[in-house]
Amino acid sequence: MAVSLPPLTLILGGQRSGKSALAEKMIEDTVAAGTCGGAIYLATAEPVASAGDPEMAARIDVHRARRGAHWRTVEEPLDVLPVIVENARPDCPVLVDCLTLWLSNVIAAGRDPDAAVEDLAAGLTGAPGPVVLVSNEVGLGVIPANAMARAFADAAGRANQRLARAAIRVLFTAAGLPLILKDTST
Amino acid sequence: MAVSLPPLTLILGGQRSGKSALAEKMIEDTVAAGTCGGAIYLATAEPVASAGDPEMAARIDVHRARRGAHWRTVEEPLDVLPVIVENARPDCPVLVDCLTLWLSNVIAAGRDPDAAVEDLAAGLTGAPGPVVLVSNEVGLGVIPANAMARAFADAAGRANQRLARAAIRVLFTAAGLPLILKDTST
Amino acid sequence: MAVSLPPLTLILGGQRSGKSALAEKMIEDTVAAGTCGGAIYLATAEPVASAGDPEMAARIDVHRARRGAHWRTVEEPLDVLPVIVENARPDCPVLVDCLTLWLSNVIAAGRDPDAAVEDLAAGLTGAPGPVVLVSNEVGLGVIPANAMARAFADAAGRANQRLARAAIRVLFTAAGLPLILKDTST
Image (cartoon, rainbow over all chains, first blue to last red; front, side, top):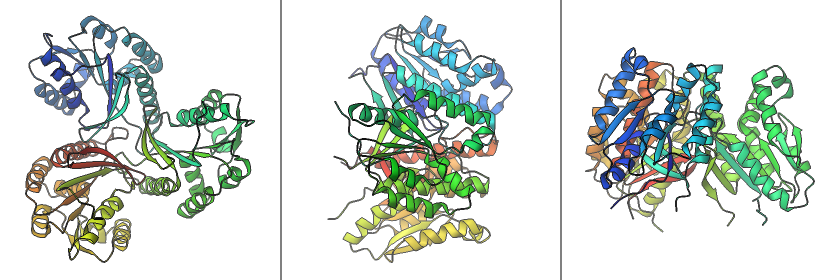
């Protein structure tokens, strides 16, 4: 039985909430039923950054080991939209993991985060295949005393709102289990 | 088609989760259908405090610019109940934005937060028009190492529980989208 | 009217979200209808640790005062599974409050948290009566800059995912109100 993906899905969740595994499962259910040579795993973690950080490198290894053979990994820390447009096909979904790391790369590169999110959200409307975005929810703890952390939580929250408007389906994940925030696919 | 507001609504959400915009939209849908000369926006941010804090001042400006002409703004950092009772009318709702900032003002003024919350919750039952409270959920991150932050998260959590008991409708917001926690209006 | 508990319930929620009170209420509704001489309250807070920490001691007192006479309290900071197996009976549920504190005790004792969680989840399947686990959701704030806090949030998130897989019913609590994440009891 084929599970069909809407054009754009946003999966929100906290640190270690099972959101990536949920996204992978959703896509694997689709790909197994189709003819795609391999769904695209678009990893936004900077290889250079993770090379210098054993904890981050270990996380990436765990993610990679969990993904089966029917995945092709593409690494792109910044310009994700061209990669999505180039690779997505109706039977070949793209998983972007994760938006929050991408957003911090955008800020670190000196670009305007809100403009980058707007470009991404607008561009995703014309993607040639289903896209699943994984994003962290980071605004539900005590408001950070650190101004930079606070500004980042604000930017991440605005990004989630903008992409949720563009998405057909939005899920909130806790303990690996989804709650449906939005579904206009039916 | 008029959307009707229950006597008391509580909208919970994280930092930059879209909870204020959701509250404003809910009220604007009601006010447009009625005869109210302007819904009340009860801002709990201290003008003095925000004058000294450009980041907070900018946030307030963004909020103010978003609100349309059919709003009247009242600023009250501490004694919100008399303002609510004085201004609310059946066709004229009051939006209190936000409870969490009010609670930190209460604590900064040396008042007992639990007693203040109890007085507010009890008094809201007799409000002469619909009230919508916006409040931050701050307890879903790592437990703060700082004792004051921990005590504040405790006080904020108790406040949300108490006001949720009083409310007819309680929503949890993420990425601008609501989940219904409680609705006894139907 | 008797409310029946499934074999394993997991109640997630933030700091001061009302999750313990919800768990106690669920169990009291069951016990009142049965013949149990007292449901088991399995407290994972270390008496020694709390003796040295007036804030923690005060929290424990508040919890204890809220629980009625039909509770028997057992304190066990580490080896919770034998206590559960020994005490649970079909008409005598066990409440474990809380998993997150237990996990930090496990780590402080130099044990492997993932292995301990696996043993607990596997062992709970054979518990001789209903078990309700209360656990903190700690991963929804800004990712901690502190590596130990980050590692703890990771371990806690993995624990919640593993126990959610084992549980028949999983609830997410905010402001004292539950959202159903999973329910395979019906």
